[in-house]
Amino acid sequence: MIDVKLLQKNFDETASALMRKKVSAEMIAELKTANEDLKIAKLAYETMQAKQNELSKLFGHYKKEGKSTDDLKVEVDTNKLLLNELLDTQRAAEDALDAIIMRVPNLPDANVPDGADENDNIEIKKVLVPPTFTFTAKEHWELAEANGWIDFERGVKLAKSRFSVVLGMGARLERALINFMLDFNRERGFMEVSVPMLVNRHALEGTGQLPKFEDDLFKIEDEELFLIPTAEVPITNLYQDEILNATELPIKMCGYTSCFRKEAGSGGRDVRGMIRQHQFHKVELVAITRADQSDAVFKDMVACASDLLSALGLPHRLVTLCTGDLGFGAAKTVDLEVWLPGQNTYREISSVSNTRDFQARRAKIRYKEEGKNLLAHTLNGSSLAVGRTMVAIMENFQQEDGSIVIPAVLQKYL
Image (cartoon, rainbow, N blue to C red; front, side, top):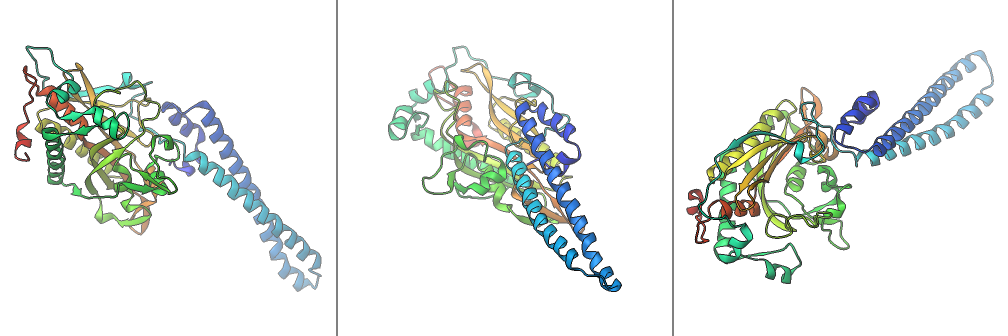
């Protein structure tokens, strides 16, 4: 969450940064009211506390002067009751502000470009040249069905729409991709971890999925447990409420999980095929760093995801997200978009984000340096979304007869 002290010291500047991220005027007004209420409550309590301290000092003077302290005692006792009431009011104001702040997104970095939506994102560079075909390129669902790799109808029969069954060579390719991605990232210095795919509410609050995005999550009935929307949640929260030694940082991790999302509100978008599924596989990169390390680690994570795509021979481009397209917890994000010949466009396959201390403040992830406990920085990124990588391989390596060539780096895994 954002820094309450920063909010209280410079509300207008903080509000301006939030408005760059398209936070509504209503939420800004709600935030301002709660902030002012807390200031008033704190001032009232501190004023009464100061008065109580002054009255308490008078007991000694009265005794020296031989004066009765009966009236003074009555006043002190009355003020004590008022102090308790004022403290309760202050705590209620703090809770009210915290409840709002938990729904407030991270502040964007100053150098993030302003913009309304994905159309205002800025391309950094293109990597590899898209293939050219002497035939009309097919989309991945045609290729998947023709090759017997994916059965969309049986996925619906087993669950509901936006679930699928991967078969035969498709299943083997999926497994090969997961192993290749884990090996690639491990060789780049990311420790492999295997984590639960169910997490509690506190973990989701720590990384920012709750309370705002509860409608997008699959919840276990009668349990405070949720299926993870991304491995970012359990991997980041490995260090929840811990104080690390500065010399341990950065901690760079990668992990494979299935991910589960209801995709509430996305009806009509990519409902066909593998682009937007309720369950999908992903290899995730997560880093816990000191504040002075996060920019360098961010560049390293972007390069790692890009190099992985290059190793697979997949043309892609790097894009800086504008303020209007930036995620809830992100201060800065670079998307990697892979070329899909069947759609004749680039589509997101990875998103690498620096959240600065936003998640660490929520999850209480700190490090000790020179005797001080400081908030860590956390970063996350897809490396890569497995289903979308399969889509890209099918479309980029399709042959005129509908067959698909497997990238050379995957062949040893098959």
